[in-house]
Image 1 (tube, rainbow, N blue to C red):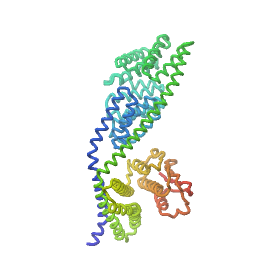
Image 2 (cartoon, helix red, strand yellow):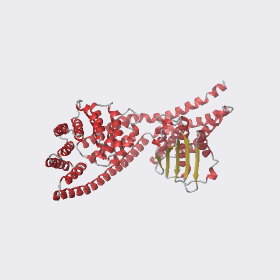
Image 3 (cartoon, rainbow, N blue to C red):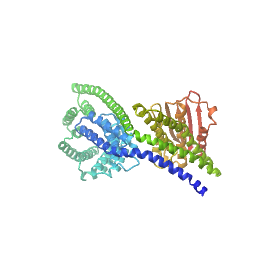
Image 4 (spheres, rainbow, N blue to C red):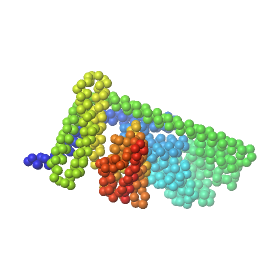
Length: 576
């Protein structure tokens, strides 16, 4: 009977730990559920404001509210609206010729959609905007890649979106002078039903231009004029500019005066619309098609426009950067105020929670010790059990016991009616809760499937704070699916131990972790700018030995390089 009960201690221990953690989290879930509806309504209101400003061509205001929506979605973990706002921020950056900023914005949202079919609209929008971005900077291979991805995503959407992505693929082939290939893509789209007249006009125009380049001038002229007619009906000014430009090319050798008139018409529209890229293109044509004073006049306009646009671009870039910075700063301040208010409202709940936490911790410590001694005759399990329990017990002793005692003492000796004393008590309780959560996280199961990369990123991100910045290079370039499960676990634990040691001992402000695959070997380098240490003094310490043992088990090697006041470095090499 006694031994039957003692054999159940591990299960009892597990249940107590889970019960304690569930009890702590349930208290917060109730208030979170009540707030979720209000948060969603707030986000949708901001989205509507941002959409309306964009529709009315008030780009600065639209950017401000899309950025505000983006920051709120990030803090409230609303993935769908985060993706939506990221796409529109990137679109505005693209329209203002901040191609680098547009790419950065989209790549932040890219991991959320690449391995999931949960957000088909977002997947199509991100791929399409990335394709447009790369097309503008003449990165045609990348543009083709993302247009093809958009085409795959569009098959889950509407026929109009499929037509748009196929038209864009054809446009890349036109840019690469593959006119026959472009015609093969565009011809089947001509007679298909399309609810978007502008997209249909683009398809007809691109097909006409492909015929022009393959010397079928009659068909080309008919298609170009048909596209121009639709664009005129839709008042698509940028489309009309493109039509005039290609009609000018058609008449260039046949009727040069008419060709020049088309360029002048297009240039007038571009000036009215302040379409900078189109103005540059058209001024080049006017310089080429004219001589003497006219050519000189257009050349001066080109130089003046270039200087003016450079200043506007920089001003816009600075303005958007300031909006982004101010928005994040304001959101951080609001979050801090909301957190403080919630703490004040729930101070009684936290006061009760501390006693349940202390009770749970005491039970965990007692049962951990008992469980260890009961199973001490099982040699293969002793070492693992002992190391795990000792680590947990040490963390409880080092990180919790003293804080718990001080908190109890504080609560007993201080006047909790005083505002400052209540705030101090709540802060102490929050610290204890955070540390319990961290101990649970450090000893939790490691996800070794498709979510391994996200869990590893989350581990590393958790060590970023106001005093320490952790930088990761090239993690996404590793084909983690080909890495064996036990090697992923070893890698995860070693990186975890390196970062924990850094946090405890190094006083580092910058940490760099770099991943590289070379000749079927995964190389991981770790370096920080902390106080360093004398390797001769620590080489036998358990932390170093634990890491070396883990790497040895997965057939890898690990070397260290450190001197006092010169930082700490570790290099890991693992066959994959």
